[in-house]
Structures are given as C-alpha cells and as structure tokens.
Length: 531
Image (tube, rainbow, N blue to C red; front, side):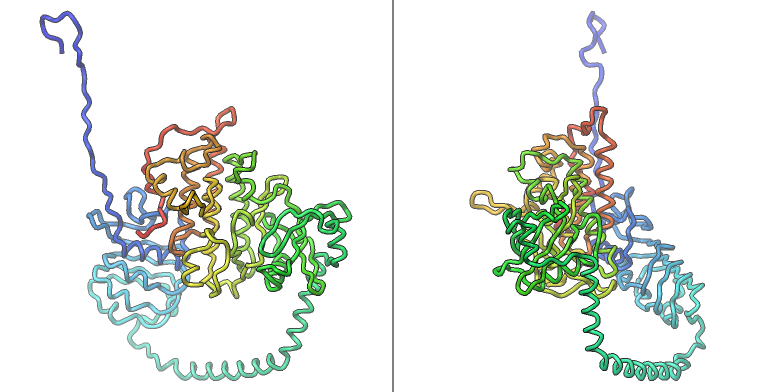
C-alpha cells in the first residue's frame, strides 16, 4: 500500500503464489496389469473405460475396479457381474494377489470351481451365483472360515459332501463306449465315400464360381484390354491392365506373370475368396480367366488408384484430414467384415496403402487377397504359417513366432493409419540412415507436438482433438504384444469418433477449429514399448 506522504498509487498492489502439487504417477503393479489384460482378452471384454492403466489416474480407473491408494498400486476389488463372461474361470484371477473381493455372478461360466482361488491370501468374498458351474466345491474353499463364498443358482454344482464321483463312472463309461463305436462307424462311411464327396464338392465350387462371376477366355482378355495396351499397375502377382467390357464398364485385369513371385495357389486363393465374399469396402471380382497357363482376375476399376499414390508427395491434390479419416473408416469396415462378418474369419495378411483402392466417389476398398488365410473355425485363434507380407507392415510378433492371427492385421492397419496421419511410410531412407516411423513419432508424442506429427501439407487444417485420438488409436494397434491390441470393431468405433470431432467442431466457414497449444500430457496414449 502507499505510504502516508505519497501522492501516487502503490506500485505493487497484488502478487500471486504458485504451489507445486505432486501428482501420483506410480502405475498399477505390473503383475496386476498383466492379469487384467489377460482377463480382458480371455473373455473379450470391450468396455470403453478398459484402456490404458487399470487404476491410474484414479478418476479414470476401469469400471468394476477398486484399487489401493498406496505408492505400489494394487487391485483390491473386481466386479464383473452380468458381463456376459463365457467359458471357464481363468487362472489369470489368481495373479491378483491383493484381491479382497471378486464378483463373477450372473454370467455364463462353466466347468468346475477352480481350487486356485483358495491361494489368494487376502480374498474375503467370492460371488459366483447365477452361472453354470459343475462338480464339487474344492475343500480348501469350503473350509476357509475367513471367506464368504456365494454359489447359488449353479444347478450342476454339488454343494454337499455326500456327492460321490463314482456315481457317474458307469454311465460315463457306457457313454464313451457308445461314442467310440459310433465314431468308428461314421469314419468307415466317410472313408468309403471320400473320393466321391471331394469330386462333387470341387464340381459345386466351379459351378458356383461360374454362376457368380463371368468366365473369360484369353482371347476375350486380350480384346477387353486392347491387347494389353495400358498397364495401370504392377504387384507380386503380375501386371494390371485397364480394360473395357462390351457394355462400356471399365475393369482392371490382373494377369499372372510367368516370373511372378506369387503363383497358382495365390491365384486360387484370391479367386475363391472374392467369389464368396462381398462387401462395399472390398474390391469386387467381375470374373476370371483360367485357360491352361494363362491366369487372370478381372476386377471393378478404381478410378483414383491406390492410397499409396494419393499420399505421395508427387500427388498435387493433398488429401484433407476428414478425407483421410473417411478412408481409414472405409478400410476398417472392410477389415471388420473379413474378421467378423464372414462365416469363416479371414486374415488379409498383406494390408498396406497400395492394397487400399479408391473409386471416383472416394470410397476406399481393400484389395489383393492372394496371401489371405481363413481360420478353420471361429474358435481358432491363430494359424502357424511362414511370415509373408510387406516389410514395415508385418507384425513383429508374427515374424518371430510364425503364428498368424487377427491381431497381425491390426498391426498392419495401425501402420497404415500412421501413414495416413503423417504421410510418412513405416520405413524410409534418409541419406545413409534408415528411419522408422515409430522412432520418429515417439518423441513428438511425448512433447505434445501434434502439428509436427500430422502431414505438414495440411498446414494445420485439422481438429487437434480428432488428430490426437487418431494417433492414440494407431499406437494402440501397433502395441508390441498382440493381447494389447484392440479388436477392429473397437478401432472402427474410435475412428468414427475422430471424424465426428472433425465435423462437429468445424466453424461456420467449414474450417476445422483447433487450439493453438497443447500441454503434451498424453496419459491416454500408450507407446509401443514394454510397460
């Protein structure tokens, strides 16, 4: 304040005090995190909140969890009641050593009540009511005085000590014997008519292909391509030529080259798959040519070419942010159909920008199914096969183990998404060094430099929140372990939200609004490194 003899106002009339408040940055114990990720994968739990660290920050803890507040954060309570859990009780629950309460009631759990639950030292409450458990209750669980166990409404679960296993022995032996006899009889019948069935099956496949797709002779292929006049692309299968059908419809004709790295098996794979699968975001097969050594596939023509060319610096028309998001959504829809929409799930195996084609209406479609593999049944989780695909887009875990699974496609899709965001390929050469996009993008994420991540040719014309969410989604897809990667349906949902942000937060001039600065605190973005 001013002195008594002063005739001027005070120079300092206020001051601010800042206090540094430490934030809890201790993550959840690694063992608990691994256990939760295993539980999430085992039962296919797709809750929106189940992303990132299960307990940190506390306000964003996963639904159904109660965690300790100490430095070494542990999970104390897990409630998965009425969560549509199916199958047996996973051993992953036994890894939650500090667990005090476990509620798995009102699900569809089957099998026997596992004895490993009695090994949890702090467990005081277990609710397994309303499931389909069978057999005897383990003695260690029944005699634990400090444990409250609820197993009501499990019709097949024996809760009395008078239940004897030998009561089931005689009926079981009789059932097994009858089953063995029946199996032998069926096997003999199948063996007798095996060749006849195979021949009939192959005949039906050929007839179905003829009904659904046009069969071209090599003479007709030469005519519609004007003697292979205009080559519009080339891949491992061979060259692709522009063609025109008699009704004026443009087509693309992929001709198998004698020196092709891919051969007749790949030709068969692509022809058979495209004969039976149909989706708006998969390139349609018009017909095929299978005449002696001449093999050709005739597709619908995609006017704008492939995504790789559209993202190239040579392309004068730069894809806008909303266009990039729409392309990623279209590609995700096609992949979701392959993974979940087909009666036999299909793995593409060679997802990359050059295998994403766009028509005149900017609708993106997946192409090139020569390396695709189908699961034998929906319960298969992987196939053992030789690594195949394109360097930079191949799942590193697949390269090491040779086990092919849906998550291998998710990794490739994540790399495509990063290229859509940045316009940088997964691997590029700079002078004498080789630059990997993961190493390039990691420090930019850590310092919150979204303007440096998104393609500089967009000149900042994008919504920042939408861009960060797209980056987060891409990074989750390329997690080093396949169990950490999201399902394609969840990825599709996230990308739709990105597009909604971009469209919804545009101003009246149609230019996306975006803040100038970003704090760089990206707790929600998980980098592809060990926890």
